[in-house]
Image (cartoon, rainbow, N blue to C red):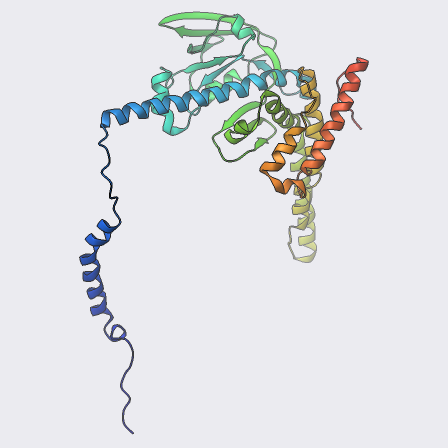
Length: 364
């Protein structure tokens, strides 16, 4: 019988030779490939100095917009944190009445320009905004003041210094040493009492969301773009304040702990660990907590003097952004349920206001 010849591609028989040939062909064709995909128009020449000038201008615009957002957030939040004090009796402090710039205030890409605008930011806290009609404003504090000492001790800078300001006593005067235009000044005033929840601004432009962790409240940049006016913003802030003041985060953690204990007992008895009870416990009463935060939050808004007529429309607009919330409510009530519940709570509050009754949430 005649022998059979090996058939197939030559590259299967001599792969190294084929690889070398392919590399030579690629290098030969590379200039043609590059030029064939290149632009064909003659672009204007840009002066690098003008590029740098425009870069600085845009950085300045970004920082000023950032400052405007943070100031708006805190100016709306400040009175709401004060009227919420009956709900957070164990978490009170003296409200500073002003905002400061720290190294973490702006995104890293803005640090260079921020140091030029807020001179001294790298070594001391700089006042970013003074809340209108606050004791701090009455005492004469101004935007741009450099803070050097608090109650006789050097204030320092960064996160730790900001935490010292957020823990002012509500029963004593705050004594500040500051520098303004090269002059050292001393200012004293009595801070207002407020819930001590820190207000955070998150640089997340696409996400429309807000969070509470029991000690702080965070809103995304996307949420600030979404809320049409300060009343909508107050609706979001009071919802998160209520999560903290009603202990929802602590209750959720307790539920998860109980679920984990149940899973451990079952695992010890059967040798099988499923995590079923932990998963169930993590969502236990989640919708009820959200509804309660809506309910209590409206009471805080009413105490702060907001007109609640039509405020429920927020959830109609939200349903346009997140259409899934119209029919599905796993951890949150659906947007139709929240719209109707807010309207019902608004009627309850209007009735109490007409009758001159205290604006206290109804408890079980």
